Amino acid sequence: MFFGKPKNLLGLDIGSSAIKMVELKDLGKGKGYQLKAFGIEPLPAEAIVGGTVMDSGAVIDAVHKLLREHNIKNLAVATSVDGNSVIIKRISMVAMSEAELAEAIQWEAGQYIPFDIEEVKIDHQILETDPATGNISVLLVAVKRDLIGEYTSLLGQAGLGAAALDVDVFCVQNAYEINYPINGSEVTALVNIGSSTTNIGVLKGSSPLFWRDIQAGGHNYTDTLQREMNLSFQQAEMAKKGEQVEGVRPEQVVPILNAVTEEFGAELKKTLDFFRVTTNENVIHKIILSGGGTQVPHIDRYLSQFFGVPVEIMNPFQNIVVDEREFPLDTINRLAPHFAVAVGLAQRKMGD
Ligand SMILES: Nc1ncnc2c1ncn2[C@@H]1O[C@H](COP(=O)(O)OP(=O)(O)OP(=O)(O)O)[C@@H](O)[C@H]1O
Ligand SMILES: [Mg+2]
Image 1 (cartoon, rainbow, N blue to C red):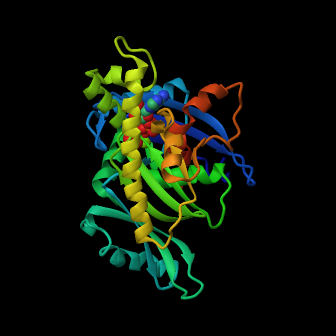
Image 2: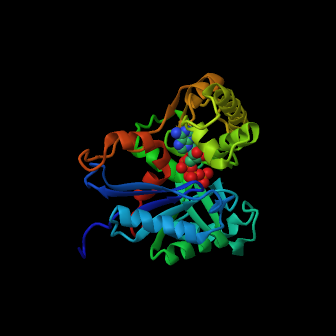
Image 3: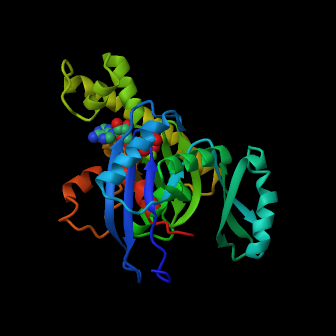
C-alpha cells in the first residue's frame, strides 16, 4: 500500500549463542501487536566471540535457515548491538529547539564519549524537561562506526537490508513496556542475561536512568561445568539444561550451578550499587529478568532473596496477540525469555 502505515521491521537479535527472530504486526489504534513469526536458531560456539563476528558464514547460514523455515518475506531488518562499542549517557542541557540540539549534541558529545568523535555515530533523544530549571534531559547514544559497518555488511551479505540499528538494553525496555504496566515512580532494574553478556538497564517509571553491560551470563555456567567436571562444551550445555549426560549426576551439577548464580548475584550487586551511588535513587523496587540465562534453575528465587526485592522473569509475548493454532503456546512460553530483545526490535518501523 502506497499511503499505508509503515510496516514493522523484522526483528533479528544476533546473540552469541543463538539468533532470535520476531515479526510483529501493529494492530493499530492502540490495540497492540500480533505475532506473525518467531524463531530461534543456535550458532556454533565460535561464530561470535566477545561481540565480534568470527564466522560470518555460520551467522548468514543461520539467518537463511530462519527466513526459509518461517517463510519470511519481510527483508527489512531491525537489529541491535551491545557491549563496549556502545556508549549511553543521560545528560542535562539548556532547553533549545530540536534543530539546535541536533547541532549542539555533536559538540557536547565529545566530552562524554571516550572515543574519537569521528569513530562513532551519535543519536539522541529528549527524555524530559525539568519543570524547575527548564533544562532538558537528553539521552545520548554513541555506537562505533566499525560495529555498525560490521552488522550492516553482514545483513547485506545475507540479502537483508539493515533498516534500523538499536541497542540491546533499549530493546529490552521496549519489550517490557508493551507487556507490563508501568508505575510512574517505581524503580525497576531490567536484567537481560544472555550467554556472554548481561545488559542492565534501570528505569524510574519509564524514564531510563542507568545502563551497563557486564561480561557475565549463561556461558559462565557452561564454562565452570566444563572445567570442574571435565566435560566438552556440548556436554556442559546439556548438563546445565538438566539433560542427561553420561557419567554426570544431577547432584554434582546443582551445587556448581548455584555457586555460579551466587557469583552472578555478586557481580550484579556491584553494578546496582554503582547505580545507587551515581544517581539519587536509593531503592530498586523490583528486578525483571530476561534472556536465556534466566533458565538456570532458581536464579530468580536466589536473586530475590539476595536483593530482598521481587524478581520476575519477563514474558515478552504476554501482551501480544498469539494465534495458538499457528504458534504452540508451550513452545512460546518455554522460549519466551530469550526473545525480549527480538520483541523490542520487532516494534520498530520503517523510517522511525
Ligand atoms: N534450559 C536452559 N537452562 C539453562 N540455561 C539455558 C537454557 N536454555 C538456554 N540457556 C542458556 O541461555 C544462554 C543464551 O541466552 P540468550 O539467547 O539470551 O543469549 P545470546 O543472546 O545468544 O547471548 P549474548 O546476548 O550474550 O550474545 C546460553 O548460555 C544458554 O546455554
Ligand atoms: Mg542476547
